[in-house]
Image (cartoon, rainbow, N blue to C red; front, side):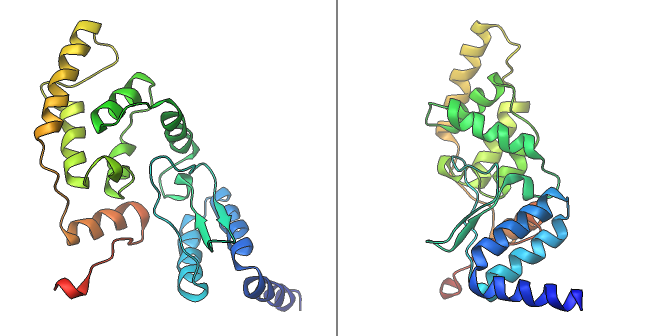
Length: 206
């Protein structure tokens, strides 16, 4: 009887207040660490209630799951991604508040200097989080040069070395082709990070 009652209450809430219901439900699943169930709820909300989940982008506040009843959207938090915690969301917000440049190299330098550059940047590039700075494959190439190339940058370098390497990295970025991963690679990358696919293929181009 109790289970039946809960099912009816939830069904009524979904039908009448879907944004509010899924916002709270997803927050609970996130806090409980039930990210597989969270992904199933996202799929249900999208497919059966027409709720939109905007792509997570640098500059958004992705520290918490937030619903918007006017746009019928729910902005997810970075913490909702499997393997991510609250630290990366806090770091990206700090970076957003601190960053004053325009290029991806400048962003990486700002991240390194503020001690927020981590291996999660690779996953963020794979889901298009930094696409305002260029296409995914280009950004991954720049990140690899920044971290492992001959002009790799570190906050522990002396100021003269930082300046010299920054100049070379800016040159590298300026001549780096703005290319993206293939559709297959995009789908593979997104699924490996999100357990979901957000790239849409225009079948008219087939």
